[in-house]
Length: 457
Image (cartoon, rainbow, N blue to C red):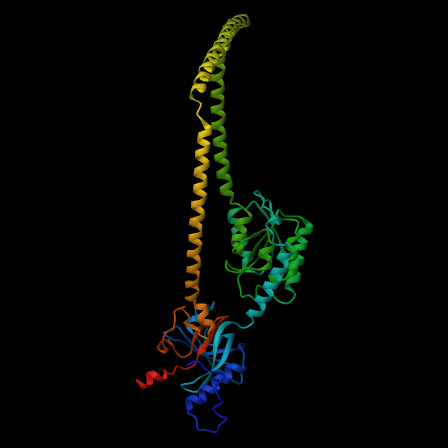
């Protein structure tokens, strides 16, 4: 049954009410007076029901509250909570009437603190993107031949060992310069930016790697600092960012010229494998040798063929003079005969044209008469169609459901958009959509009572 806010207060008359009526009134009071809000706490007694609903207790050091997150909301959560997790939930305070239990209905859930960090991350990203720091037109191409690579990371980081191992395996000929800096902790962002600025000022390297291993969002937060992004953008050499794992994205990744999924991948992007270069060089050498041999053979054959065709100048001039005389005679004949043939053909066509010229005056009279009849017929048909459309418009207006809604009726649909034709389609703790003549509203169902006519039956 849909609660009616216009119904009289059951406590005003002093009459005795049932427990169900009491719980329903308390539930309505909580839902109307406490808005949807964020609540933080620790997960306890977490249970995932077979229906897909989540049931758990949210607690802090001095209090706790029962919580439920229905399957329709839980399926959109980006993680599965566990016992002891610190979380923040967006919930509506309610009362489970059958047991009289006070609880919160959770609409969304996130890890504690992540919401604020992510919001700050998005705000800074939007600001820097608006300034053009992430535009592709500013991205520089990594040079194909690298002689020196700079690395900005911590000397104690496992990422440094992975990078050095990869470079030793792929390109032992490439020099490496380390610009040491802390990669997390207080003041780490400023020190990272200073190390990048130092590498940019010295211009000792062909490309600069800004790297660290994986970690939580808090561990990687130094690479989300605005000063780090701006320093990377203004660096004098191309920058490859390899921060965290493949799923981690930081401001350093967006500002860098190339983003690598891991520090090891950054090292692979910075320097091609020496064995690949040597193999490619050998292929080019073999191809060049084959091309030179083929070109030399072709030119030798061309020289022999040209030498056989070489004639004396006097013989060549005499041959060309004979060809010129022959062409001159053919040209005179070709220009005179077509003209005579064309003049004769033109005279014949003029004679035939005069004999076949039609009487256009009579045809114009017939055409005018036919056009007049066609215009009259089209006007008559158009008038008939307009009268038919007017009649159909009146019939359609009589069947317009909008007129029914304007008389005070409403259309009920469930969350899947199906029409509700009976109270049997209504279920407690569900939502329905009500469409009136002017708008649509979403209404929650607390309880369902059968209609009076059904009770009499």
